[in-house]
Amino acid sequence: MEQWAEIRRLHRSEGVPIKEIARRLGVARNTVRAALASDTAPSYSRPSKGSAVDAFEPQIRALLREYPTMPATVIAQRIGWSRSLTVLKDRVRVIRPEFRGVDPADRVIYQPGGCSQWDLWFPDYRIPVGHNQLSMLPVLVMTLAFSRYRSAVMIPSRQGGDILAGMWLLLSQLGAATRKLVWDRESAIGGKGKPTALAAGFVGSLGTRLELAPPCDPEYKGMVERNNRFFETSFLPGRHFASPADFTAQFDRWLADYANTRVVRSIGDRRPCDVLTEDLAQMATLPPSAPQVGLSTRVRLGRDYYVRVAGNDYSVHPSVIGRFVDITADLHRVRIACGEVTVADHDRSWANHVTIADAQHVRAAKELRRDYRNQQLQNRARNAARVRTHPDGHEVPIRALPDYDDLFGVHFATPPPGGLTPTASTITEG
Image (cartoon, rainbow, N blue to C red; front, top):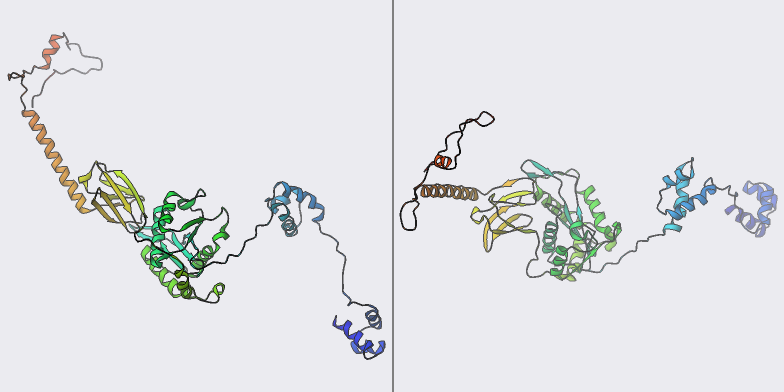
């Protein structure tokens, strides 16, 4: 392009002969003549010879018309493709949107206090939970969409009560709640496409709204999904944790010292900790009383004075055996009440298949069992000493059982089959 312009300039502006132009630029005279005769700069072009996929394109379209999601590898098998898959995949990538369509992802502009995204992150690390057990526990993660502020807490399970207890803990730390809480279709929150009764009651008490992401659409809450990957690669490597509480403590320090103090381009090159105040100003205040969270159930206490909570057995005072007890468990405590009276209060164990017994309950059961046996012995002695009498007061005689054998003509002189010799009927009067 530059050489073509220089040839035309020298010849038209300065009147340099063709021979001299060729000498100066080091090109052939015919090249100079062709440049002067052309109104456009010369360009190299070669007609396309086509692609090996062209002959198979009708078959590819027929398959995609009926099966829009068919993988390119399967298409290659169906059409008998024997060449490189790269060429075929490139052509399928171009044709597929004609039959499947395109699903663009819009960019959402978040307003202060408008939205928070929630998710469960499962760190690939076995946490010691006591009783010589290790467990891979979920971490509840919250990301404020406007300020990009993150907070998290490790919870013992993915049951609805534990998730809501973790949500209330994180919201209580903020002191406010966003107008919309975005979740994916977590089974305990909205696995069937609508909020569970437990989750609906929770957000109703907060005065906010729960929004569930469409199925198979991780971009809907991509902010918290990307944060999970960020935690996996930036927080977890090289760390060791002694307990779930130690994990949460280390995570909180890391979020406060690093994650929430990094400059984020999407919020105007500001830090989430600096934008948080603006976010909190537009959030809804929390209710004066805590909503119903944690695990709760009601059972009748059996002779085995233990109740099962999340796979573990907790002792209850045996004085309420046979009565209904109400069980409530948060992230740290398990409390059992009978009416208005608390009959058990234990630290919650995050291990599995563990029996937690209160020494006071065991001693009370031992005393009740001893009293029960003494009462049984007294009843037996009282029954043995009791003399049966008629209503008029005279004693009821007791006959020996052989007298009834003679009365009905029953005799055991001949041994029965099997060689067993019958013994005489006796009566024992205690």
